[in-house]
Image (cartoon, rainbow, N blue to C red; front, side, top):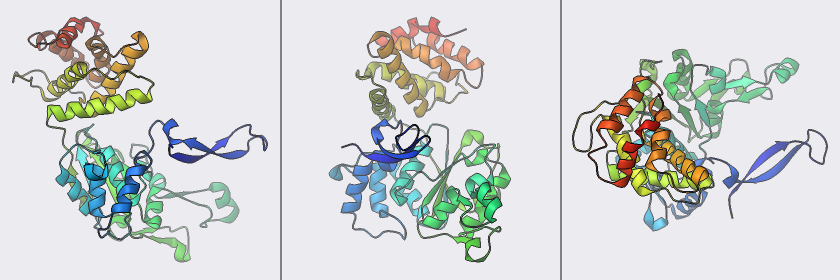
Length: 386
């Protein structure tokens, strides 16, 4: 039976116009359920078999949380993050301390996914998430007010609207802060007291409600792209309260190909495509991405490196688009011609010269390779716009 979630649906229900009716919605109708829903069975098995000591406030031990992320074939736990297992060890130990965990790296290296998996393993909930950006305010991080109740009753716990940070501290849960360096410096620094003193002041209230003290299990996982360095760099005071861990791109071609194949196949199934993606097409795709990302071909030739992000995550998105294009336009798996049509939107984002670099790659760096799909890729280079 598929897991379900409770949702409120407003609409013309029987009780009357505008009534709020609680319904049960199958989780498989949600485009992307959180990790604790997607892997509910695995988490349940891990909890049942978990006999190791747990840090205060954690739902799993460090050992079980590690198995959830890196996999355990004996328990039927799938591998969910492709990377250095020692990174997972260091990240989990950091979360067991009073310091925050900062995941940094190139875009598309699965920092957000790792953050989500760690939060699901540690606190059983990955949804206390702050999305950083230029417009992010302290109210969206800490708390805000129901202004109707505020006007009627004045500041009170009833009129307080908790944001992820307050909820995480009060409930002893993990808070995720995505793209923290996209936020203004003064907004970032609202984390200083929660990370150092483990307390959040609410000066509008009086008495015991004026201070929220962090409960066992509270921690913060933040992510930042190295390409955003210098946008809103963190203060030295805030940096001291985080342990920094770098998430590197996948080094091995076979590993990256297997990951792209698995993720693209899952996305295609959810999109109604019954045909499996062609492995020879995916091999061309992944190889192309790796060479455009590094500026070096498989035989060691130097070439133009694209300024656009040619990450594994982008490769999965392109593989998904190639499969959709082939299936819904012709009723078959996508081909290398579809790959050329889908590449332009990925390559030509940040710099108009990237499209010219991609065109040169297809004209000069593909002809010497063997294989039907490589030849089709070369022959379809005219499909690039411009």
